[in-house]
Structure formats: C-alpha cells, structure tokens
Length: 449
Picture: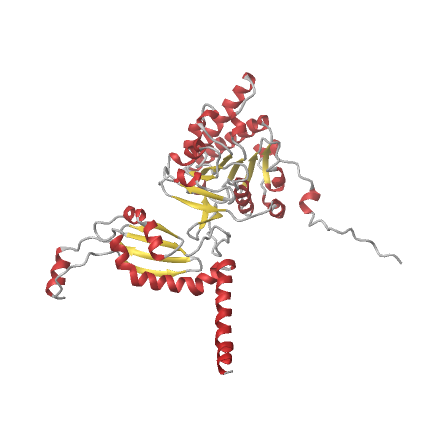
C-alpha cells in the first residue's frame, strides 16, 4: 500500500510534468525553450566551448609572451591553443546570443564557415554570425524553428521610413528601411507568399505619413482593395505609362526645391517645406515589359526608361520603388538588367526556375541561390532576403488576410495625401466605403409597438 502511495504522489506529478513538457515543445516552443532548452543549451555551451572551438578549427596558437608565461609561471609544459574569448552570453525567448572577441589570426568569415558545425555541436536549430564591430562577432542561436509559426518581436524598430515586414530565422525582425535601402525587388511564384509579403508591407506603410502609389496591370485585382489609402493607382499599361511620367515630373520638381534650398536630400529640407515621401508599388513588373505588337514597343521602352530614371535618381527626392513579380530575367526585354541594378534590396520567395533566383540574388549573394531553390512548396511566405554586402538570411512573413489589410487601409485613409501631379490617377473611393464600419451579419429588425 505504501508503495502505491509513493507511486501516486511522486510518479503521477512526474508523468504530468513530462507530458506538459512534450506538449509545450510541440505547441508552445517559446515556453519550452525558456524553461528547458535554454538552461540545457547554456550548460552545454559552457562545458564544451573550448573543445568545440578546437575541433572546429577556431583556435590559434598563443603568442610567444603567453606561451612563456604559461611555461614559467603556470609551470605547464603544454600550451593550449587560444579560442575566441567569450565576452557576453544572453538568453532570449527564441534562442541565445554570444558575443566573442576574436584573437589575432581569426576573422568573421572563419566563424561563418563553421556555423553549421557549431549548430550540431551545441544542439540548437541555427547559428547566425554577425560582425558587430572590428574584432567582435555575435553568435545568434535559435533553439527552435521560429519560422514555423511566425510571431513578430514585441520591440518594433522606429524611424521615419522604417517598417518591420517579416521575421528572420534568428528571431529578429526583417525591416525595410527606405532611407538605407531605397529600392527593392521582390520575386516569387504563385502561392509562394509574395502577395502576403506585399500585403504586410502595405499595412505597415499605411500607418506612416507617406503617399502610396500602385501599379497593378491585372486590372487592379490585387491593389484595388487598398484604394482608400492609395494616392494614385494604375490598372492598365496605358495608365501605368502616364503615372510613371507623372512621377518623373514630381521628381524633377522636387529637385528644383532641393536646389533652391541648397539641400542634397529631401530629408535635409525644413519640415515645413518638405514634401511627403512616395512609395511606388509595382505588383507585376513583367506586365510592363510584355507587348503584343510593334505599336506597344514605344510605350514599353518609355515605361522602362522612366523606371530606370526613378531607380537612379529618385532616392534623393524620397521616391522609393517596390518592384514585385513572379519571374524576372534578361529575356523580358531591353532594360531589365539595368533596372535590376538599381534595386538594392532583394527578397526572393519560391520560384519556378533557377534563372529568376539568379537574377534576384546571383549578383549580390551567390550562395543564397541554392537556399531559394530549396524552399519547399508547403511553406508559403518563406523567402531569402539579400543585400548588397553579400549577406543573406531566411525570412517569413506573418499571415495576414486580405480583409484585415483592407480594414487597415480604410482606417488610415485620412493619411493618404492628395498630390496635384497624381490627381488624374487618384482611385475613386466612395465616402460610404471609407466611413463604413463592419457589415453586420444579421439585418436588424425594428421594434414595433
């Protein structure tokens, strides 16, 4: 009887705790990592750090002074190789960050090359290496797959033209900072999550005092729902050509304003005379290149030329480009590679052909092309983001429905500026559509006496 009592009092709580841990690991990975994974990872890291660095080739021979002190003061005959010095270890709800001071003879590229071996040695999901300052690197470890269920960090980056769009695989937010990366190219096949990425971007931009301009040559099937927040919208190639001409005229008038005030950038102007920033959102760039006959060739060449001019010059005038498409290649026509050269930011979702991945990332981060082609079809929203420095990372956008995005655009419709040069392309929005709240599912029946 006593044995059954002990089994009941001790075994049942242990079984419940084990079941709770397994449930948390599957359903609440943040809780599991904070309670179990992080303590285990920190102990494993502390115990095996020196041996792991040694077998991964991240140690150097000590200096002559160090070897002399070890032999004569410490009275040890063997002098151990020197690993990077651990400066700081921080835990988080998604992983662990370790700051290392690199010894002479090691560079960040050596640590990056060994990141996969470090991941297996310490039993974490991924290890990303970031150079924080000369001689220091930060190991950003994630304890689980944070891209499986996207949950954006609570701390949101701030700035006049800074918006968080997706989640990186190291648990940080992927941010579009238009003042640092003014123009970007986003590619992805059908059902790859490209539209979800653009939807999140529009929702974040809708909250800022900026003018949103859309080009959707698919008769506006994607962007017309955002009309309350758009300052201009073109839904046919002819309208797109006129809208691009109007944006170039606006850019030239802003250059006149900058010249009059002796400023090199729109953000250097006094706030009382500073024009509102403009973000141009092109939904399917291939529609601007494709033509059906010789009569459309002149219009196509003019649109491409205007896009290239905006890409080359519009940053100083605070006119930014977001170019999206399913496919992008040199066979689109004259000017395709010239336009791509002006688009610094690159985000590539799952694509149907390797050439599109090469056009998106091959010129800035060749190693990322293989990561793009490995994206499975059952993970929409997963993409590879690269930059001109050669770095890249996997990202995933949070799920956002079209109705939710439309509601945000209606909510912030008052922030849509009316620019005179874009007035002919301002989408028609009824007052009822802007001011109406949610539609009731049940029609109310008036009470009768």
